[in-house]
Length: 403
Image 1: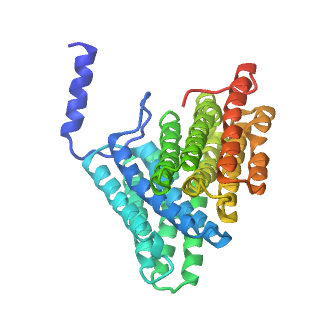
Image 2: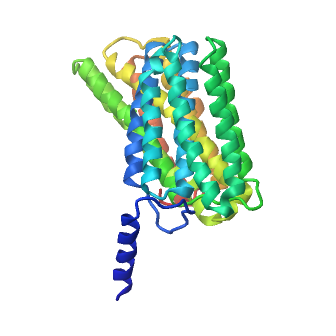
């Protein structure tokens, strides 16, 4: 029997076994599964619903609400991804737990616009469902993988405390309910960071991790493409609208390019080069958490682009739209620069680009120009940034790996 035939026989045997105990995922060349991609579909809807919150209220209050709700959803996605990264067995129980978590995301997405009323409890229920699915998964890992017990214990403490606080919030009226939500997420966020400090910490799969987070970036970037389509349709294809939409698409493409060929690539290289050292040094913690401001900024960019395209034929954009677009673009560039500088170990290159782009994006928003000029200048800034990134890479200021 050849090695290929033996491998196929082993894979068939695993597929026949419907229930398998969790084990550490350390296989090389591991990639995202079809179940993970299906799971991400629920978050496409969630991000879109969060964007609607900001689109309806482009004030500081609306921005804070948008950031808070999207942060909760992002952590729900990230924490589920971290579990799957280590313990995905793709057996019937793992699939059912993942689908249960997906149902929780759907519940959260359906109630995003009602969190300030009685129906806001459904948002909390959705989050608790995700926590319970994760807790069940970590209990299985603790039971079946002795080497992972110390790591799993910390995740269990964090997720259990977070779930308990969110459950208590169901009996509390707003605004106290929101303070409990914040406390629950904070507790949930802090405990996993302690897991990386353990002497016998279980490492993450460092090929699977950047692929999953890269896919989430694409998921959020999709909102900008949707924004262009919606703006064109609702703007009735006026010449100025078409011109603004063209510029908006250029911005989306440039932001994609910046992440995958520059900042994200520099971070991926750090993960690949240091390998098992990233757990010891907590590098993967920084990698995970820096994606939060990246994702929030990208989602806000989409809101600004949609309104800018829709009103492309107007004399001016509203102050809210200009500042959403300017601050969001600056936030994305600044987050990408911090990730590139810290994980790429090249501060000078990160300051030159994308760091220098952040204040320029704010300056463009401050100018109060017609929509086609505002979006055009941002498009020029990001496209020039792509070129600058290419030159920095060529000169050795930035070293990357393919994401």
